[in-house]
Every structure is written in structure tokens, then in C-alpha cells.
Image (cartoon, rainbow, N blue to C red; front, side):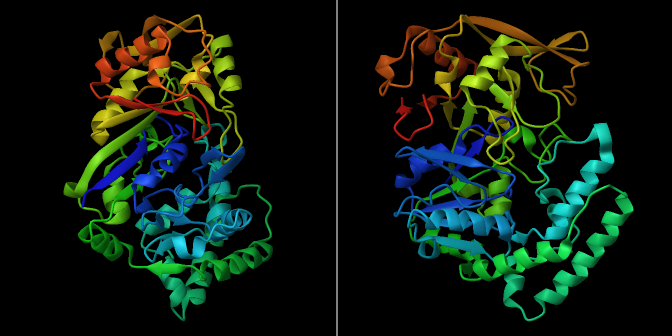
Length: 423
């Protein structure tokens, strides 16, 4: 049985959680394959907004098993809070959620290291969420990390102490002015570990092998966005994992030949949280309106998102790197009322017109070249069928499909489950 894959094509915050929630009814297993609690997937239904950070977005459906894969890094403290929030809604997560033994744990000292490193950079900071993600992946690649499976071993606390001591020495090295009480943080951490150990730990790759052999349908859920990929994103202003399609193979143990559909999620415009280049960023009333109407604040950090016109150069790059087979356009409703729309179709790069994403897209090197289109005034939030779309919206979609050479199968016109239109 093939595995379908869903991921973001921009700088994150595209609306992946909502689409996973909408699609879950078609799958037996929803498997998160990378990232950590620096991700925030927002789902809204029955008048309630839910924000998930580590738990897969299929958790609100009884039909699916939710798997946290080996490529994910887990902060037990944040994970426990997520579980507590689920308990309010009588979600039987113990029977519906599995954790890979190979997933790495975020320690309290990872978060402190993150803060010390960022503080030491001054104006050159990368805009970290300060969740300890980077230091955890550093320990993973440095072969020092602690994994979920270690919690089943008798000596795991000795391993923890040795690593935490090493981290404290590194924090001192940064000479950053951060105040902390590690003993207090550890009390919360060890209490959360007890809760985590109540869940089912599995050899996740073997579980997925068997699920495929049994003909079960699997959806791999990505976090962040393709332009934040550690290899293919706008380095160094990126996350610490592979957010692109390849990350599903290493983050779950799924063979490349087993991936079938690749669902690419993008906003009808572009946003970015934190530092880093952003060629189409707007500093005028259009950008202000996008942020206000789109409620563009980070689901994890609460930071305001930078807003700009849709960048087709970057989007086409992400489509190609991921091998996207179907596109899903989010937040089309936010653009209602704009007298005009602009789409970046090329860059002026060092005096030359190019249509690919170059090595460096800092403002001094890149100037966006736009195609201007007519906007629409109609309120899209009440629409439920593509036959109701205004002509200007259809023109916008047709233009994007032609440029990207991939069909747009879903258009979202609001945050609720019901505001999801299939084409």
C-alpha cells in the first residue's frame, strides 16, 4: 500500500493541520515525520480552535491511529500540556496514539542552550522559537541524544545527567545573560516523563511496514514548510530538520518508492515568521490588511507574521523539490476586497531576469518581478462549491495552475472544517 504525503510549500503556517484533519477520514494512520513543538498546527471545528504542536492532526478522529515518528523531537513538558488539552474533550489518546522509540527527547537544557545561543548572536539572530529544537537535532547528529526508547532502560537518568552537565558547560561558554532555575525545570520535566511513559512506545518503522503489507492507508504529516528545510530552505534562517518530501522517508522509514500522492499546501499569499530574506514582503496597507484579516500570528510563538504577495518563483521551486502531485490553496478568503493582486513570477537577480530560486535571495541581490491581476470583492467564507467562485478568483487559480503545472484540488475559504472546497 502506498503512503501519501502532506507538507507545506512556503515558510510554514500554511494550514497543514486543517487539511490533515479534513483528510483523516480517508486514512487509517496519520504519521508525523519531523520537527518538534516549534510547529503549531491549528484546527477549528464546532466553534472551537485547537492548536497542536507535536501530536498528529488526525487525533480528533476515532478512525485513525496517530503516530509520532522517529524524525520528530519531543518536549515531554509541552507534550503533556497537549495531552491535558485533549483530555478536556474526552479524546482517548492512549488507544489512538503511538510513539516511535527512535524519536529524540528535548531536555530542559536544550531549551536553555537555544536561548543562550540566540542571545549570543545579537542582531544576527536567526529567529529561533527557543523551544530547544536546534540543540536537540545537534545532539542527534552528534550521537549524544536521548531517545524515547532510552526511557525503557535502567540507566536513562544517568545518561540524562551526563548530557545535562555537558549542556550547562556549553551555556557558560556562551556567556549569555539568561536566568534559569534548572532544578525547577527538571521537576516539571521528570513529571512529564512519567505521563509520556503511559503511552505506547513502538518500533515505528516495523509498524509501518506491517501497516503497508496489510493494505492500510497512511498519510505522512509534515511540519514547518519547504523553505525552512535545513538543506533546501533559506539557510541559515531555517529549521533543523528536513521539511521536504525526503524527510518523510528518513523520519518514518518509508521507502521513496512507496510514496504516491504528495499534497502541497500553500497560502494564496506569503507569510514568514522570524528573521530571514522575504523578497515579496509588503510594508504597506496591503501587507497590513493580510496580517489583520488573516490573523497572522504564530500558533506556537504568537509572533506577528510578515506578509507579502505570492512568490511563484519560490513556490515552483518547492513543488519541484517535493514532487508535488496535488496543490491545496489556503486562505483565499483573506484576499477578498483587494482592488488588485500581484504575483511574483520572476526575480531580477544581480541585473539579470531569472525564474529559479538562486543561492542567495537577500534583498540586495533579488528584486521581485510581478504580474498584476484583478482582485475580487465577494466574501468567500460562505461559499461551499467551486461553481460559486467569483470570476477573478477562478482567473487567479487558473493562472497559478498554469504556472505551477500542478492542479489545485482544494481551496480553503476559512478556518473551519466546513470551509474547505474540493475542486
